[in-house]
Amino acid sequence: MNVEIINTGSELMLGRVLNTHQQWLCRRLADLGHVVTRQVAIADSGPAIQQAVREALTRADLIITTGGLGPTSDDLTRELIAELLGKKLLKSPEVQAHIENFFARRKRPRPEKTDTETFVPEGAEFFLNATGTAPGLAMKITDGSWKFGDEVGISPSTIYHLPSPPVKWLVMLPGPPRELRPMFDHQVVPLLKREFADEMYVCHTLRTTGLGESRVQELVAAGLQPLVMRGLGVGYCARPGAVDVRLTGGGNRAAALVREGAAIVQKILGENIFGFDDDEIEAVVVERLRAQRKTLATAESCTGGLMASRVTDVPGASEIFLGGVVSYANSAKEKFLVVKSSTLERFGTVSEPVAREMALGAREKFGSDFAIAVTGIAGPAGGSAEKPVGTVFIALASAEGVAVKKFLNVWDRATFKQVTATQALEWLRQVLSA
Ligand code: ATP
Image (cartoon, rainbow, N blue to C red; front, side, top):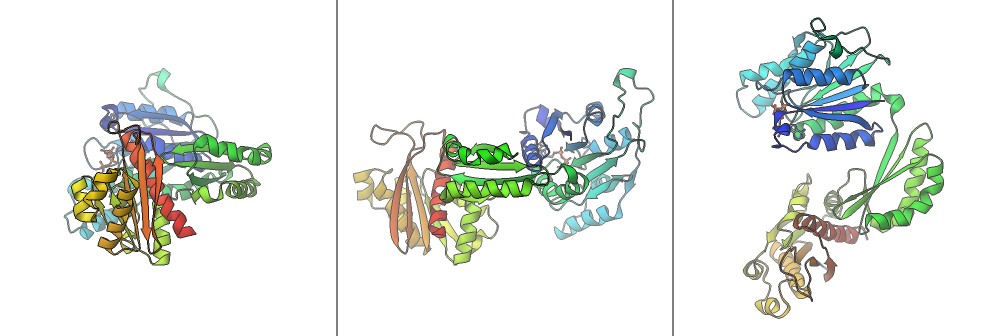
């Protein structure tokens, strides 16, 4: 099956917005077994959008466009595609009611311009937008049931003839990621499962931490080899502080094959597996703390609040997260976490005793069951022979006492922060799982 993505938006062409839809949709589709065959980004201009869709229709079974469904004058995708396919736009009372409700709930008058979003191409399915107003649209295109609306007058070199198979789907999604992502997961995926059932395959990801990508491969490859011979696909994906092992398979034996593979990986990597598929360490930590009715506080120096940010990204974090201190300066460590000035002077800011006192201070100040503290040297400057750039101390305080671990995370600053936060949260996850 051929899948093509068309990302629209002049801001993409100007480099003002990073085209994250390309990566996000490709990944989601690949996890469903549909590897994207072509992707193009184009400006919001009539000829560019129609030309791209026209060309994609000659090759693809599934075309996904992103952007241009909103109410402003540069949002033209719906109109241009309807025009291209010779479909009328019909007002949908259901979409209108949804948009009216969207504004009523926010106690704001509905802007007249949103009228354009209530129009749906004749025969199209629509996805009501759970986090915005413009609905997504899906058009089933069957051979003979459509023609290009403007074929007359187009030069012969730009007329394309549809090959079989006859059924294609064209899905249009809104541009904002917070609208596109839930719509894809909750509304487009069911459509794909319904319409492309024969093409679906099984994909299961085991998420690991604490080991590098090559080490993970070294450990599991031999064990998986007999299954690979029977058709199991194995992929590895390194992320800051984590490595994913992706197992895939097609056909009616796929589920059993992937299950067998997952059992082997789990046996070998056991403790290093923190979750599956889209699980994030922080979500697992929040879930475990909630289940155990325990609370958490953070004391962060070199991660600048990233741990607290990641924990509070998880819905329901308020039940377990009491608060955090970003104690970047020594004075803040002393003032808010009661770290002793003598400890700072004697051992230095980045040291085991300081990490220990930070964690104890946070636990005491917040009155939490657990407190995690981090202090380290992100670099690029500030290292020494004894404490090179990348040195990090992570402390974990609980009713059992306090323990400190030392790591060496030699990365750029942004990756350093992510890796360090992952290590700290992973440690807590392990303690909560024990
Ligand atoms: P709106 O109702 O906001 O106008 P829309 O469906 O018309 O939505 P666009 O106007 O094309 O979508 O894009 C809205 C915003 O979504 C952009 O300003 C940008 O921030 C984000 N966006 C659009 N396309 C992408 C993309 N490919 N990757 C990441 N973000 C994007």
